[in-house]
Length: 283
Image 1 (cartoon, rainbow, N blue to C red):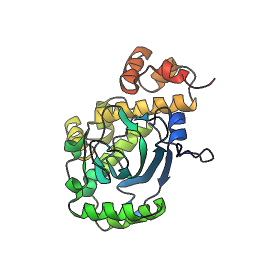
Image 2: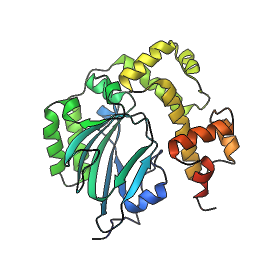
Image 3: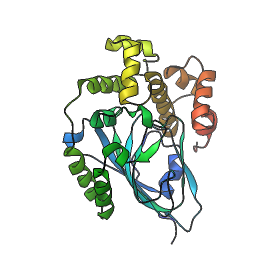
Protein backbone atom coordinates (compact mmCIF):
# COMPACT_ATOMS: atom_id res chain seq x y z
CA UNK A 1 0.00 0.00 0.00
CA UNK A 2 1.37 3.42 -0.92
CA UNK A 3 1.53 6.46 1.30
CA UNK A 4 -1.86 7.91 2.20
CA UNK A 5 -2.41 11.38 0.82
CA UNK A 6 -5.39 13.63 0.28
CA UNK A 7 -4.42 16.02 -2.51
CA UNK A 8 -7.87 17.58 -2.79
CA UNK A 9 -8.34 18.44 0.88
CA UNK A 10 -6.95 21.55 2.49
CA UNK A 11 -5.41 20.83 5.89
CA UNK A 12 -6.48 23.18 8.67
CA UNK A 13 -4.03 25.95 9.51
CA UNK A 14 -2.02 24.89 12.52
CA UNK A 15 0.28 27.65 13.67
CA UNK A 16 3.58 26.18 14.79
CA UNK A 17 3.76 23.25 12.34
CA UNK A 18 7.13 23.58 10.63
CA UNK A 19 7.32 23.07 6.87
CA UNK A 20 3.55 22.44 6.65
CA UNK A 21 3.76 21.92 2.90
CA UNK A 22 5.65 18.67 3.57
CA UNK A 23 3.38 17.37 6.31
CA UNK A 24 0.23 18.18 4.35
CA UNK A 25 1.32 15.75 1.61
CA UNK A 26 2.28 12.87 3.91
CA UNK A 27 -0.37 12.97 6.63
CA UNK A 28 -4.03 13.86 6.89
CA UNK A 29 -4.90 16.34 9.62
CA UNK A 30 -8.30 17.55 10.78
CA UNK A 31 -9.79 19.62 13.57
CA UNK A 32 -13.16 19.36 15.30
CA UNK A 33 -14.98 21.60 17.76
CA UNK A 34 -15.80 20.38 21.27
CA UNK A 35 -19.17 20.74 22.94
CA UNK A 36 -19.58 24.45 23.82
CA UNK A 37 -19.97 23.43 27.46
CA UNK A 38 -16.31 22.37 27.40
CA UNK A 39 -14.97 25.51 25.71
CA UNK A 40 -13.75 26.87 29.06
CA UNK A 41 -11.05 24.20 29.12
CA UNK A 42 -10.80 22.59 25.67
CA UNK A 43 -9.53 24.53 22.65
CA UNK A 44 -10.32 21.88 20.02
CA UNK A 45 -10.04 18.24 19.08
CA UNK A 46 -7.53 17.24 16.41
CA UNK A 47 -6.79 14.15 14.39
CA UNK A 48 -3.83 12.87 12.41
CA UNK A 49 -3.56 9.71 10.35
CA UNK A 50 -0.92 8.36 7.99
CA UNK A 51 0.11 5.28 6.06
CA UNK A 52 3.79 5.23 5.10
CA UNK A 53 4.30 1.47 5.10
CA UNK A 54 5.54 1.64 1.51
CA UNK A 55 7.18 5.05 1.84
CA UNK A 56 10.15 6.58 3.62
CA UNK A 57 9.55 7.81 7.18
CA UNK A 58 9.89 11.51 7.88
CA UNK A 59 10.34 13.69 10.94
CA UNK A 60 7.42 15.96 11.79
CA UNK A 61 8.45 19.08 13.69
CA UNK A 62 6.30 21.55 15.59
CA UNK A 63 6.97 24.72 17.57
CA UNK A 64 4.51 23.64 20.23
CA UNK A 65 2.01 25.74 22.17
CA UNK A 66 1.86 25.99 25.99
CA UNK A 67 -0.94 23.42 26.05
CA UNK A 68 -1.40 19.96 27.49
CA UNK A 69 -2.79 17.38 25.06
CA UNK A 70 -4.66 14.14 25.73
CA UNK A 71 -4.31 11.61 22.91
CA UNK A 72 -5.62 8.20 21.98
CA UNK A 73 -3.09 6.63 19.61
CA UNK A 74 -2.86 3.48 17.56
CA UNK A 75 -0.30 2.37 15.00
CA UNK A 76 2.21 -0.14 13.79
CA UNK A 77 5.12 1.28 15.80
CA UNK A 78 5.53 2.51 19.40
CA UNK A 79 5.34 6.25 19.97
CA UNK A 80 7.04 8.25 22.72
CA UNK A 81 8.27 4.98 24.21
CA UNK A 82 4.74 3.63 24.69
CA UNK A 83 3.36 0.49 23.09
CA UNK A 84 0.21 1.22 21.09
CA UNK A 85 -2.72 1.45 21.33
CA UNK A 86 -2.54 3.84 24.26
CA UNK A 87 -4.15 6.81 25.92
CA UNK A 88 -1.51 9.43 26.74
CA UNK A 89 -1.05 12.84 28.31
CA UNK A 90 1.49 15.15 26.65
CA UNK A 91 2.80 17.87 28.92
CA UNK A 92 3.92 21.21 27.54
CA UNK A 93 6.95 20.74 25.27
CA UNK A 94 9.58 23.42 25.85
CA UNK A 95 11.89 22.43 23.00
CA UNK A 96 11.15 21.87 19.33
CA UNK A 97 8.79 18.91 19.13
CA UNK A 98 10.20 16.29 16.74
CA UNK A 99 8.55 12.96 16.05
CA UNK A 100 9.49 10.28 13.52
CA UNK A 101 6.43 9.33 11.47
CA UNK A 102 6.66 5.80 10.08
CA UNK A 103 4.46 2.82 9.33
CA UNK A 104 0.75 3.51 9.74
CA UNK A 105 -1.08 5.16 12.58
CA UNK A 106 -3.87 7.36 13.83
CA UNK A 107 -4.16 9.86 16.66
CA UNK A 108 -7.23 11.49 18.17
CA UNK A 109 -6.20 14.40 20.36
CA UNK A 110 -7.70 16.87 22.80
CA UNK A 111 -5.91 20.21 22.92
CA UNK A 112 -6.60 22.02 26.18
CA UNK A 113 -6.30 25.77 26.51
CA UNK A 114 -3.08 26.86 28.24
CA UNK A 115 -3.80 26.12 31.88
CA UNK A 116 -6.99 24.27 30.96
CA UNK A 117 -5.85 20.77 31.86
CA UNK A 118 -4.60 21.97 35.23
CA UNK A 119 -7.93 23.66 35.91
CA UNK A 120 -9.89 20.64 34.65
CA UNK A 121 -8.05 18.02 36.71
CA UNK A 122 -6.92 20.11 39.69
CA UNK A 123 -3.38 18.81 39.09
CA UNK A 124 -0.14 20.77 39.15
CA UNK A 125 0.84 20.21 35.52
CA UNK A 126 4.41 21.44 36.01
CA UNK A 127 5.45 17.87 36.75
CA UNK A 128 4.38 16.77 33.26
CA UNK A 129 6.33 19.40 31.33
CA UNK A 130 8.41 17.73 28.59
CA UNK A 131 6.92 14.33 29.47
CA UNK A 132 4.44 11.92 27.88
CA UNK A 133 2.69 9.74 30.46
CA UNK A 134 -0.15 7.20 30.41
CA UNK A 135 -3.58 8.81 30.65
CA UNK A 136 -4.40 6.78 33.76
CA UNK A 137 -1.78 8.80 35.67
CA UNK A 138 -3.88 11.92 35.16
CA UNK A 139 -7.46 10.68 35.00
CA UNK A 140 -7.35 7.42 36.91
CA UNK A 141 -8.77 4.01 36.00
CA UNK A 142 -11.66 5.53 34.01
CA UNK A 143 -9.12 6.55 31.36
CA UNK A 144 -8.83 2.92 30.25
CA UNK A 145 -12.51 2.73 29.34
CA UNK A 146 -12.33 6.06 27.51
CA UNK A 147 -9.33 4.91 25.47
CA UNK A 148 -11.07 1.70 24.46
CA UNK A 149 -14.27 3.54 23.56
CA UNK A 150 -12.42 5.96 21.25
CA UNK A 151 -10.50 3.13 19.58
CA UNK A 152 -13.72 1.22 18.86
CA UNK A 153 -15.37 4.08 16.96
CA UNK A 154 -15.24 4.45 13.20
CA UNK A 155 -15.25 8.19 12.54
CA UNK A 156 -13.59 11.26 14.00
CA UNK A 157 -16.97 12.85 14.57
CA UNK A 158 -18.00 9.87 16.73
CA UNK A 159 -14.72 10.10 18.62
CA UNK A 160 -15.29 13.79 19.27
CA UNK A 161 -18.77 13.17 20.65
CA UNK A 162 -17.35 10.37 22.84
CA UNK A 163 -14.77 12.80 24.21
CA UNK A 164 -17.52 15.38 24.78
CA UNK A 165 -19.45 12.94 26.91
CA UNK A 166 -16.46 11.72 28.87
CA UNK A 167 -15.14 15.20 29.64
CA UNK A 168 -18.51 16.85 30.28
CA UNK A 169 -19.35 14.24 32.91
CA UNK A 170 -16.16 15.21 34.76
CA UNK A 171 -16.22 18.97 34.25
CA UNK A 172 -15.22 20.84 37.42
CA UNK A 173 -16.60 24.07 38.85
CA UNK A 174 -15.26 27.27 37.32
CA UNK A 175 -11.87 28.27 38.78
CA UNK A 176 -11.39 32.06 38.92
CA UNK A 177 -7.60 31.70 39.15
CA UNK A 178 -7.64 29.79 35.87
CA UNK A 179 -9.77 32.54 34.34
CA UNK A 180 -7.03 34.99 35.30
CA UNK A 181 -4.31 32.81 33.78
CA UNK A 182 -6.26 32.37 30.55
CA UNK A 183 -6.82 36.13 30.26
CA UNK A 184 -3.08 36.73 30.62
CA UNK A 185 -2.21 34.07 28.03
CA UNK A 186 -4.74 35.47 25.57
CA UNK A 187 -3.25 38.93 26.07
CA UNK A 188 0.29 37.64 25.47
CA UNK A 189 -0.77 35.83 22.31
CA UNK A 190 -2.63 38.78 20.81
CA UNK A 191 -0.45 41.77 21.72
CA UNK A 192 3.16 41.75 20.42
CA UNK A 193 3.81 44.91 22.45
CA UNK A 194 3.97 42.73 25.56
CA UNK A 195 7.66 41.86 25.56
CA UNK A 196 8.45 41.38 29.28
CA UNK A 197 6.93 39.70 32.31
CA UNK A 198 7.03 43.04 34.11
CA UNK A 199 4.77 44.61 31.48
CA UNK A 200 2.37 41.68 31.67
CA UNK A 201 2.23 41.73 35.47
CA UNK A 202 1.60 45.48 35.59
CA UNK A 203 -1.14 45.34 32.98
CA UNK A 204 -2.96 42.63 34.92
CA UNK A 205 -2.35 44.07 38.37
CA UNK A 206 -0.42 41.14 39.86
CA UNK A 207 3.14 40.64 41.06
CA UNK A 208 5.66 38.79 38.91
CA UNK A 209 6.02 36.22 41.67
CA UNK A 210 2.26 35.53 41.69
CA UNK A 211 2.29 35.24 37.91
CA UNK A 212 5.17 32.76 38.03
CA UNK A 213 3.38 30.62 40.62
CA UNK A 214 0.08 30.58 38.73
CA UNK A 215 1.73 29.72 35.42
CA UNK A 216 3.71 26.84 36.86
CA UNK A 217 0.61 25.38 38.53
CA UNK A 218 -1.77 25.74 35.61
CA UNK A 219 0.30 26.05 32.43
CA UNK A 220 3.43 24.07 33.33
CA UNK A 221 5.91 26.74 32.17
CA UNK A 222 6.66 30.32 33.19
CA UNK A 223 5.21 33.51 31.67
CA UNK A 224 8.57 34.47 30.14
CA UNK A 225 8.59 31.21 28.17
CA UNK A 226 5.00 31.79 27.02
CA UNK A 227 5.90 35.31 25.89
CA UNK A 228 8.83 34.21 23.77
CA UNK A 229 7.00 31.21 22.33
CA UNK A 230 4.05 33.39 21.27
CA UNK A 231 6.33 35.77 19.39
CA UNK A 232 8.17 32.87 17.74
CA UNK A 233 4.84 31.42 16.65
CA UNK A 234 4.05 34.78 15.12
CA UNK A 235 7.38 34.76 13.29
CA UNK A 236 6.96 31.24 11.88
CA UNK A 237 3.40 31.99 10.80
CA UNK A 238 4.36 35.26 9.10
CA UNK A 239 7.16 33.54 7.20
CA UNK A 240 4.98 30.56 6.21
CA UNK A 241 2.25 32.86 4.87
CA UNK A 242 4.58 35.49 3.39
CA UNK A 243 3.19 38.26 5.61
CA UNK A 244 6.36 40.28 6.15
CA UNK A 245 8.47 42.76 4.20
CA UNK A 246 11.92 41.87 5.51
CA UNK A 247 13.28 39.87 8.43
CA UNK A 248 14.84 42.87 10.18
CA UNK A 249 11.48 44.63 10.24
CA UNK A 250 9.73 41.44 11.37
CA UNK A 251 12.16 41.11 14.29
CA UNK A 252 11.50 44.66 15.51
CA UNK A 253 7.75 44.35 15.01
CA UNK A 254 7.63 41.23 17.17
CA UNK A 255 9.61 42.75 20.02
CA UNK A 256 13.23 41.68 19.48
CA UNK A 257 15.95 44.20 20.22
CA UNK A 258 17.59 43.56 16.86
CA UNK A 259 17.76 41.01 14.07
CA UNK A 260 20.76 39.23 15.59
CA UNK A 261 18.83 38.37 18.77
CA UNK A 262 15.82 37.32 16.70
CA UNK A 263 18.00 35.07 14.53
CA UNK A 264 19.60 33.46 17.57
CA UNK A 265 16.26 32.65 19.26
CA UNK A 266 14.59 31.49 16.05
CA UNK A 267 17.50 29.24 15.09
CA UNK A 268 17.73 27.71 18.58
CA UNK A 269 14.11 26.59 18.39
CA UNK A 270 13.41 25.95 14.70
CA UNK A 271 16.81 24.48 13.86
CA UNK A 272 17.66 26.91 11.06
CA UNK A 273 17.87 30.66 10.68
CA UNK A 274 14.84 32.75 9.69
CA UNK A 275 16.52 33.43 6.33
CA UNK A 276 17.07 29.73 5.65
CA UNK A 277 13.55 28.83 6.76
CA UNK A 278 12.08 31.56 4.52
CA UNK A 279 14.25 30.51 1.56
CA UNK A 280 12.45 27.21 1.19
CA UNK A 281 9.32 29.05 0.04
CA UNK A 282 8.92 29.62 -3.72
CA UNK A 283 9.24 33.25 -4.73
